[in-house]
Structure formats: structure tokens, C-alpha cells
Amino acid sequence: MQVFGKRPRRPRADAIAELVSTILSQNTNDALRDRAYTSLRQRFPTWEEVCEASEQEVADAIQIAGLSQHKAPAIQRALRRIQAERGGWSLDFLRDMPVEDAKRWLTSIKGVGPKTTAIVLLFALGVPAFPVDTHIHRVTRRLGLIPKETSREKAHELLEAIFPPEDYYTGHLNLIRLGREVCQARKPHCELCVLRDLCAYYRQLALSSR
Image (cartoon, rainbow, N blue to C red):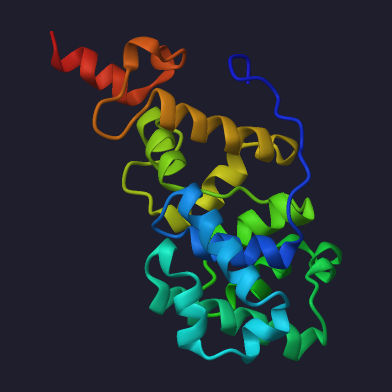
């Protein structure tokens, strides 16, 4: 936070929109995710219409994001579950649940994993959860914050125990920025990293170069 600063919270989409957008984001970039989401809402302006459409129609609308044959049923399952259990199009009830119960409710939907759950809770509902994407998984293992063999799913739990809840939002965004700009997958720029003196990966490199 000393380098990238504290991140002010910015208004995000409502929780259902965040859920659908996050499902679309799997294995693609932000630009294609956003184009797919726009295409979906233009073709089906209401969530009810998304539910009533055929799976292939939804897949066609989101095709640009890739894996549309997988994402279309995942989106429809999630929306139909919300409608069936809540009788409407809102996830605001999750704010009133204990955090672990809210997580269990979301992850009980097939196709909704820990990352998607944490994003919806943190960004759309303001509930303390720590999303772990590929950048955060890589950076925190290199730093030695979590063991190298830690799965991405397990990393959510471990990082929530390390960071104070009030720092989940800033910590998540700053670790992603560090991973994109400095601690890149193929060629990390260790010489630019302000955390290199604390980094297990950098210490190992230094020892191997002696």
C-alpha cells in the first residue's frame, strides 16, 4: 500500500450483474468479458429473458468471451437458482448472512467457485472476502506468504487469515497490479520490485546466482 496506495472503493455493478460478469471473465481478458456482457444484455435486457432463452441463444450472445458452451449454462443455472429461492433478482440478502454462510450459499451453485464468490461479496456487496486470481496466486506464493504448493482455492482461506478484513479490497487490487506490472509470470522484474528484500523467490534467485 505504501507504493500503490490505498484504493478508494468505486461503485460497481449490482451483485447479480457482478456474478454474471465474473462467470464471463473466466479464461478471458477484461475487454472481451465486457463485450460479452454488453452483448448479452442487449440481446436479453432482463434476467428473466436470459433464463427463458435457450442455452444456445445465450451461448451465441456471449461467444466472444470464449467457452460459451460452458458459461451459458452456468449463467442460467445461477439465475434460475436465485429466482427459485429468492423470488426476485437480488443478492442483497447475503449481506445479512454470516460471511461463511454467504460463501456457502454462492458456492453451492454449480459453476460458482471461491473466486467468483469472493468477487461478488467484496465488490458488489461490501462483504469481507479476498478474491484470488492467477496474479495473486503467483505473487503470494513467490513472496512466501503462502506455501508454493497451495492451490488457488486454498489460497483464499490463507490470505483472508493474513490480511486484515479492512485491507482485503486494497490488498486484492494492489497484488493484481504488482503481478501485472512487475511480478510477471514468465519474466518477473525483480529489480523493480519494492518487496524483493522480503521475497522468498528473490532470495532463492540470489542464492542460485552465487
